[in-house]
Length: 226
Length: 261
Image 1: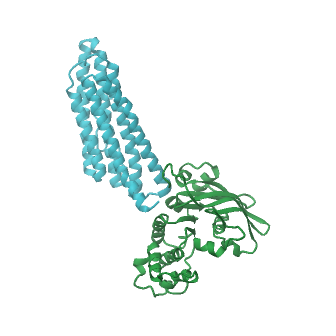
Image 2: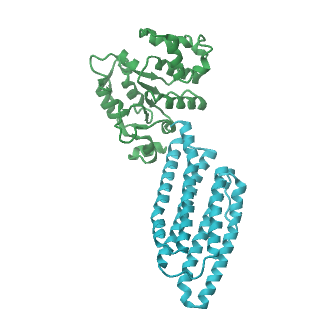
Image 3: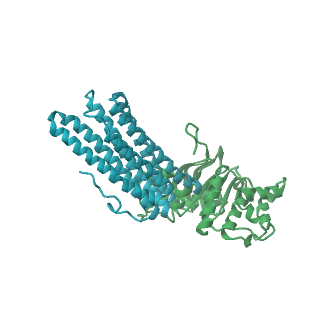
């Protein structure tokens, strides 16, 4: 393999990850749309389309294994290959959370939502912004932006806690609310996890740029109730 | 690699090749097809018969009196060891680049022109020299000093000159026996890059001690290993990527992971 072929492969990892991130973002948005409009058909499609994200992850991993085995990447190249593998795992899991939200829609069936969605879409917006910015930080090798993503996770955690308390109040008011409140709590939890995974991507970017491992909690403080 | 659905064409096919030096068997039962316009690497420990096998492909072992080969080597439809085949003609069609650069003690120009002249080349020699040097990615470095001695070139340049010399007689297969083992990493990289260019036009078979190099440059890899009687066998042959990520034989795995012997 020509060194420039190798360099082309290295550079293509960025496009592969961007493609995965796009699908994750679409799936998450569609899942919330399906939830809000009780569109089970759409929810079903999201569940089916998650395979596509899984396949992209497999393909990326395969490509990286090939490069590691035959091209001996070192230094920054090595970190680039390893971080791509790592980030792809994060994205694949994010896709699973989006799928999880779609499955909650299906499980709710025709039951009306417990309450209009207000904080959950805000949470989704924050989490997806973190996702997009973590990938931007990756493309631009921007440690500063990666740091910002980690910090932004606090806002998502705060919203999650707020949603948790609110839903708890509904449950305490009337035990018949418990089932539908739990569904929404699961949705909020999935979004909270998506934001956490974006933070992991950002930490991986910091490592890619600096070569130093970012200790857990050194940048982000986990304020979610778990 | 051939596009899916397109039948692979083979430059050289070895069928059940065995080699003897006198009464000593040194290679047994090697069967492998080397595809056209690809790079086939032969790897293995010392004494695994890599160079011997390579030299069978252009009948270079014929120069050794006690050498005997069984089995067949096909070059297209042509049986290389048929009684009527001419080793000299074979060596024009199947060129060889050796471990140490071995330019003739002549000018750069004459190094290239030597083979074609002997061959009775009637065309424009200047053009042929330029084309060959271009093909070996050396032209830009030497175009203003073609009359200088080839020995004034650096090791890496000399090796590319030897490749240009091989190209001048218009071969279709180029054999390379450890072509980078006497070169520094930068010169090695230049040769590796050049090989990728060359394979668009030629088929290449390379013997290398350096399995990382095999991983980097080749499409197919053959792993040879001697048994307890020092008879070499082809242990595994396949796509380089597969061989380096998921070899099917334990011995290949042990060798490529550095746990051999």
